[in-house]
Amino acid sequence: MSTEDVYWYWLNNIEGIGRITIRQLLEMYGSPKAIYDAKEDDVLPYISKSKGREMYIQSRNWDRLLMEWNQLECKQITFIHPESRQYPKRLRTISDAPLGLYYKGRLPEENGKAVAIIGARNCTRYGVEMARFFGRELAKCNIAVISGLARGIDGMAHTGALEGGGYTLGILGCGIDIVYPNENYRLFMQMQESGGILSESNIGIQPVAGLFPQRNRLIAGMADGILVIEAMEKSGTFITVDQGLEQGKEIFALPGKLSDVKSRGCNNLIKLGAHMVTEVSDILEILHYSEKKENYTNTIEEAEGKVKKVSLAPNEKMVYSCLQIEPKYLDDIINEIQIAPQDVCMILNRLVVKGLIVENARNYYAIRL
Picture (cartoon, rainbow, N blue to C red):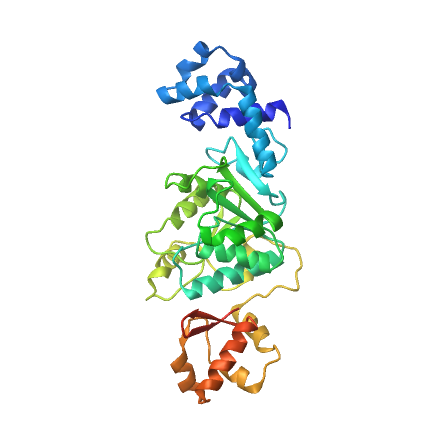
């Protein structure tokens, strides 16, 4: 810890004072320490809101600041600012660059490639498997997978990256210590150990609607390209896409059925000029990825082929072969393969235990890529 870090922390945590005011004060005084040491009467005219002026006066309490700083260290949270060595280079060039960031775990390598994988929270089974597949295979290529740790596409992209043994970064729209949604608790814990968690918000700050657009500019900023897996025509996903376009990032989209409402946003993106993605190499080529990687799976067909090569009994192969990414009802499976119902149920349970298929809903089964 340096005292300069604590001054930056102080300036970023005065309630009622935003980034515009902070930048004006830095332009006037040159550093957070100079602002802290300045006379109140000199600084207050630059703070427009009465609440901000009141909180500024109350905030200059060095003992309390040190106590808060120690709290961060106890929680293994690192605070960084534009003068920090760890501050991501990618974020220095974006509009309204953050003046303070909190992270757990580690940040991605500065010189490595990174792809943001985003999409619908309420996604289809197809979206779940595609997010996992692309997250996993990109991670195998040493490409950092960036997303927002939300339910649906975000969570599955992070999960896939961890399965691929690679790096993944979750960027939060709430305090750095807040797990939102709760269902991602285990994933959050895994990522702070094997990847990273990043937020512009201090500990204890609950998720509110206004924080997510700000979060999205960081997701776009940390990535070289943005892959949209599933999105409706009007979706919050496009806030990140718009930010990416403003920042000059490559936009990728996964095509979907014309009749699928959840894919209309992706199909429209492709129509407007986004790169259509049907295999991993589509992304690698656009990003000029030159590192040789032999162990990644390029297409869905290859992934399915690898599963089919797993040692299965004849009846197991028969049951597995009739399943798809989209869930199939138990009665339809039984009717299709003409095996005794009790045997089909036993085989399905064995395939679930082996991790080759999932029971998506009661009596609905689908393959797991």
